[in-house]
Each structure stands twice: as C-alpha cells, then as structure tokens.
Image (cartoon, rainbow, N blue to C red; front, side, top):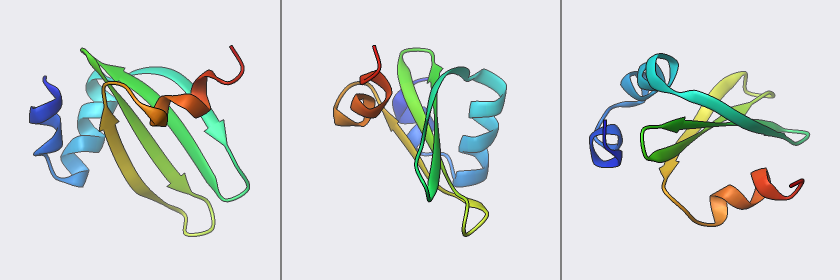
Length: 75
C-alpha cells in the first residue's frame, strides 16, 4: 500500500489498514491524548485517541516531518 492509496481511504478503512498492516513503533501520551505511531510499508501513521471524548480523533499519515519529533525526543 502506498501513502496515496492510504490517504484516499475513509476513516474506518484507514483504521482497518493500520490494524492489518501496521507495525507498532512507539507512543506519546499527554493528559488529553494518546498517540500511537505505526509503520506501513514506506510511510508512518499516527493514530490519535482523545480520552475525554473516548474516540479516535485523527489518523495522520506522513513520510517525514515534524510529526515524528514527539516520538524521537527520548532517543
């Protein structure tokens, strides 16, 4: 699956792709959100869960950039 193919999926299909093909890499937890980072083929997927709303609020896909920063601060 390519990044483009992933991006044209709806939210439920994106989540299914993460569950089926994603390799968990790391997480980042704040008071209001829990973010999990996955790798699918040659790109990353960040799944953001809002604990006060009790639901997934975002699924971000990317290859590089500032979204990786919060996962690399401890390394």
